[in-house]
Amino acid sequence: MTPVVRKIATLGHPILRTPARTLTREELCATETQSFIDDLIETMRDARGAGLAATQVYVPLSMCAIEVNNNPRYPYKPPIPLTVLVNPVITPLSAETFENFEGCLSVPNLRGRVLRHTEVRVQAWDRHGNTLDFEVRGLSAGTYQHEVDHLHGKIFVDRVFDTNTLCTWEHFERYELARFAEEAKALVARYGA
Ligand code: ZN
Image (cartoon, rainbow, N blue to C red; front, side, top):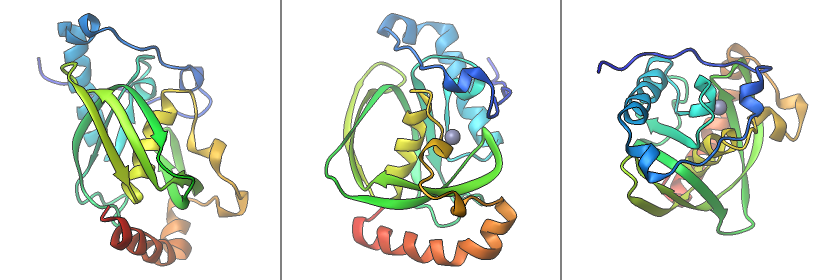
C-alpha cells in the first residue's frame, strides 16, 4: 500500500497527553500495523521532522520513528539513519545533562531550552520485533529522549527550565541559532553525535 501522510496533533489535543500502550509482537507484525509504520515515516519526512511518535498522529501505541539527514529545521544535528522504535525504554547512563534547544511538530512555531541526559541506553524492538539495545550520546541522545517522552504523554514544553528561552522559529534563527550551533558543535566533537 502507498504510505499516507497523516494529520499531526497539536498542543492541547488530549491524545498528546495520553500514555501510549505497548504492543505485542503479534500486533506489531499485523499488516495494518506495518502499514501504519510506513505512514508514520512518510508523515515525519513530509513534515521534515527529526522524529515522530505514534501519539502525534492520533495512535496511542508505543512506537516512534527517528531520522536526521541534513534537516533544514535542525542544521546542526548530526545524521541519524531511519530508526523505528517499538515499546522503547530509555535509561540514563550517567547524571550528566546538556541544554538542548528543542522544537516539535506538535507545537508549531515554538522552541525552547530543555535539559537532556547526555548518554542513554535505548532498549526497544525494531519494526519486525527484533530486539534493539544500544547507547546514544550527545545531541542525538536528546532526539531519542524527545520522541520517547511523547509516548509517556510528555511534551518538550514541560521540560523547558527557563521560559525566557522560549522563542518562535524566526527569533531562534535571528537570536539563538549561532550560539546554539556552537554548543551543538562542542557536543558533537566530544561525543561524536
Ligand atoms: Zn515532538
